Length: 91
Image: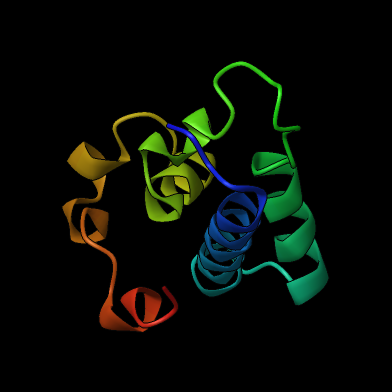
C-alpha cells in the first residue's frame, strides 16, 4: 500500500495507542511500559523501506494478545477474540 507520510504517521500513532491501551488494561503494565512496548512493536519505518506498514495487516488488539497470551490465544481465551467497545472507541 502506498502511504503519504502523514497517513502513515497517523496510522502508526493510532496503532501504538491501541496497543498501549491493551497492555495497560489487560497486561497490567504502567503507562510508560505500555508506550515503550507499543513503540517497540510498531517502530517507525522509513518511506523507502520495503513492505513499510506490513505490521498493520492485523490490528493492535491481535498483536497485543499474542504478546500477552501467546499463539492461539483465541482458542484458550475465546473471550478475547473480539476487543471491547472501549478499545474500539480509541480508533
